[in-house]
Amino acid sequence: MKQVVTLITVGIVFSIAANGGLQAQNRNRAAQSLAEISDSLRDISATVSLSVVQITATGYGIDNGDHQNGVSLLSRQRSTGSGIILSDDGYIMTNAHVIEDARSIRVKLNGQRSGQTSLFDAKLSGMDGLLDLALLKIQAQGLKPLTFGSSMDVKQGQIVMAFGSPLGLENSVSMGVVSATSRQLSEDDPRLFVQTDTPINPGNSGGPLVDVRGRVVGINTFIFSRSGGNEGIGFAIPSNVARYAYTSFRRDGHVHRGQIGVNVRTITPPIALAFNFEPENGVLVEDVLPEGPADKAGLRVGDVILTMNEVPLHNIRDLSLQLYEYMIGNKVTLQVLRNQKKLPIFVSVTESKNDPVRFADLLNPDQNLISKLAILGVTLDDKIRDLLPLRIDKGVLVAAFAGPPLYFGDQLHQGDVIHAVNGHSVTSVDELRKQLDNVKSGQPIVIQAERSGSLNFLVMDGN
Image 1 (cartoon, rainbow, N blue to C red):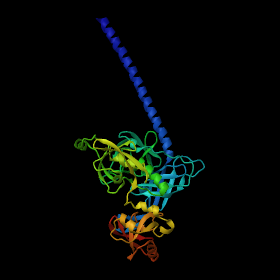
Image 2 (cartoon, helix red, strand yellow):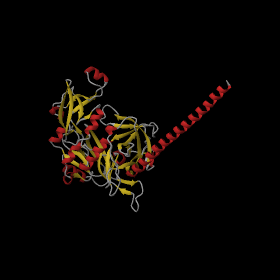
Image 3 (tube, rainbow, N blue to C red):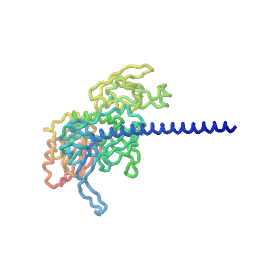
Image 4 (cartoon, rainbow, N blue to C red):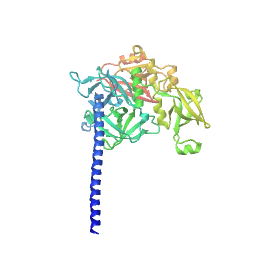
């Protein structure tokens, strides 16, 4: 009996020793795997950070200080954000809100540039307030641009990294995962965002959200926060939208919004059950714009769009992002399910008729420049009146901007229609120039402008 116990005891010792060795091997393998992951993330950080810049925008604004007995003071304002180098000759993308109303924009490059300056003055090449994107240009060569990945390929739970200058701390990086791939802030908001728990703070705006291959999958733009700091709910503009805007800015100086003239709905399980569809396989056509491109191509209410140019569509997000792949005038092939039969439909991508940006293509800077307001204006005609329902049928459309604002106070927006200056009616570009010339130095300018169907008085002061 004693011998048996001895043998059992020896077996237990050998077993413990074997298990201890196996655990040590597992720990070594785990440590090696973590080290490889760490090295990979370090390499990505070292590469990407060279293509991320810090942006400083300065201007003037109204400061309603509590210590001034309710008196509003004009003060110099300064904001910092981030940007992404997209070309070796100095094109940089950032958020529109980073440089909005700025009179001076400076860009600081990360990394060492032996014998060369790292601080540059930047010029605005294009801006879109709705998309919250802007393109800057600096006079530099030999920069290291980042490349766009496809936001169509972004998956919930994948690892991403955010770069930028949070709270002014340049060349910072944080890591997290994609929380949602197609977050819509409200049902009426046409924009879609990549949601992430990656720590993002003020100053990260305009910086890249990259995947583990160092490709840009989004541009960090804002956070939801009760404290003002990061709470794990950050949002980035999808890379497909940013790439489309970048191409448009470089080609036209502004963004054209493509559409095919349909309203669609994601096929949820209740809809699939009611209509005998497959859930999340295609998008259901709820409405077709009369005389629009889809209507002319033969698309009908109740059709299911399965693919666009052979790319499967699973929800509204897929259709919205896919449209950013095409320029105005391109034709796309839709595979449509109708009465349980599949058929191809060829549709042209056109521009929304009520988008004031489309008038910018018709401008001649020499003829349409209104230098005192730093805008390009268009005299209202029958064509514009048909496209823009207006309460007053005479005036000047603000079609584009020709530089930073020249006046303090209220500002014009693209798409505004100017009807009067200091109480004097304006009916043409020439009349607008004349009325502005009549304003004496030091006298404020009050512009009556129509914006989204509402009449407003905009008060501007050049002092």
